[in-house]
Structures are given as structure tokens and as C-alpha cells.
Image (cartoon, rainbow, N blue to C red; front, side, top):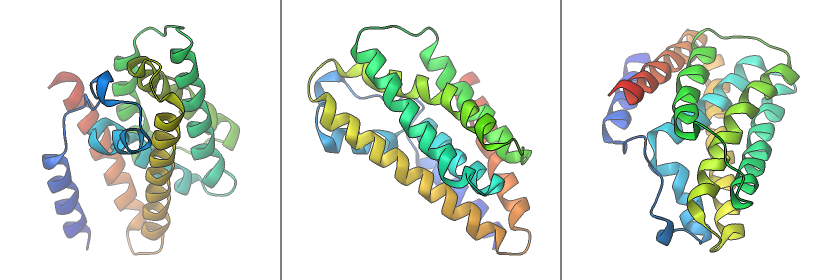
Length: 192
């Protein structure tokens, strides 16, 4: 079981697009462009699933609050970019989020819910800003709703994977392996 999952993750990683999933601004502006955006970048997929996995590892209120704070703060970052407020180091922060969130899953870090939410909020601000910074003003609402929905669904996939892994033998180890692979992939994206 674990071997098959690792092979599937490896195949997925090999077929995914590079970290720069951001579309040409002329292609933005629709719900479907927003919805598809997080699904075409390895950095986006890894971070969103890692948030869900981490929330599942922590459990309790964190299960829904941590991903919810991510989506909400991402919307704030999106709005800041649309308002013309710049954030420094957006792309490096996004790549750092892959490594950092992969590590918290790999190490099964257990912070209380507010602290966990604060950690993901920092990264979510940059993810949202990147989306808004490339959009311009065309179709911002539709695009924003699309990428927030896709992000939430990727979080749900991570939660489902984490909860499912917890029910099988060595599932906690499997989640930690996925976290380690996420962090390693983040490093490869940074230095590759």
C-alpha cells in the first residue's frame, strides 16, 4: 500500500508543471481560470494539500480552522494586491511555504489551533497576493472565487488523506513521508 502511494506521488510529481503556475494576465478573469490556477502548479498543490494534512494531524478545531484561515487570509492577500499594495519576496515566500509546510507535516508539529492558523496565514497572504498581483482588474471577483474554491478543495483532499492515513497501519508514518517529500520537492523547486 505504502509503496503504491509513493509511486503514485512520484508519478504525479514528474508530470506536474513547474512552480511557476501563474498564467498570463490576459488569461485571467473567469471563474474557471481562477479554479484551474491552483491545480496547475506543483507549488500550489503541495502547499494546499500540506495544510490539509497538517490540520488532520493536529485534529480537533484545527481540522477546519487552519484551512479556513488559509483561505480567508489568501483572500486578504488577493485584495491587497488588487488595491496596489506591494509585498516583498512574494515568489520566494511561496516557495518557502512548500518547504516549511512540508516540514511541519513531516515532523508532525503539534501547535495549538491559533498558532497553527497564524503559521498558515503568513504563507496564505503571499499566495493570495501572487494571484491578485497578476490579475489586474479584469474579472477579479470570479477569478478570486474560483481560486479560493479550488484551494479549499485541495485542503479537503489533504484532510481526507490525513484522516484516511490515520486509519491504516503506519498511516501516521505515511503522512510524515509525504510531508518530507513535499519539503524536498520545495527545495528542488528553489534550487532546481
